[in-house]
Amino acid sequence: WDTTNPMGEAVANEMRDVLDEMTPCEIGCYASCLIAEENYVQYDHLFGNVETAVKTAENICDRLLTAQQEEGVDSRENPVNLNTDYVQLTKMWLEGDDWDDVVNAYGRQEGDVARILVRVADVLRQFGDVTGLDNCREARELIMRDVLVE
Image (cartoon, rainbow, N blue to C red; front, side):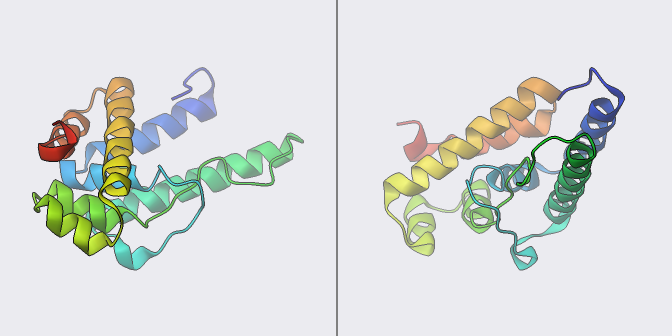
């Protein structure tokens, strides 16, 4: 979170306020929206504060893109890709579903599912390091269980 300028501080506070209101499951699902390389948001995958966080992040990205363009910065793409493809997978795992059920519901190889969830856990670690929010640590602990720590 760049808080060395007024816009950076305002953005950091705005996003932190949203994250602070989230349950561990919600913040884990939001973190899953940040790990894909392409931008793809479907709101029907979202629930509770996850939708609020995605909309807030989209709004922040739009404002940042506008500010960059006003300053002549070459910015053809969004500064952050948001992708909701992994929300349901992450939610199932955070809610304690069995590994085989999660893998079968997602329809991919076990290694792909493990990689996705470990990347989500890493984002949560980074959120927790920066914000100090307990829900980040709690969500990370819920993800890093069973086959992911063996």
